[in-house]
Length: 107
Image (tube, rainbow, N blue to C red; front, side, top):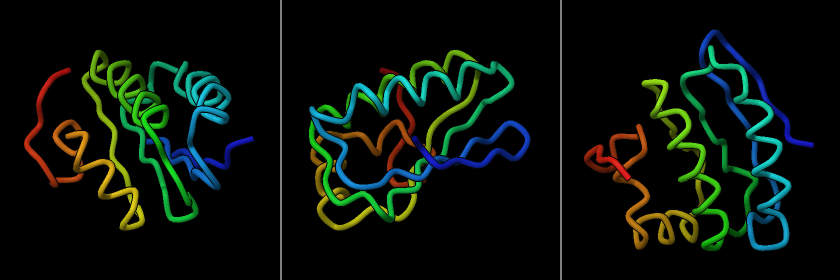
């Protein structure tokens, strides 16, 4: 079960442990249930307690980005470790996030 808070149109979700092939399906389903409310326009993923992320985790983020972008919103991350930051830079994920670490683009 994901820990989350909502303030207006912004949903903040804390990710913990690993976001990999074993856990990504459950996280994807939980996030989709949370953002099912179309009033939610922005998702902030708090990664300070996330210890590992692989390409499955990247896919989770991209999928939620696409959903929220269709609503005119977006996704941002906070608290990512050096390892996760490196993975996100290598994959170009920062280019679609609202963190100011890259230019916005469409996927």
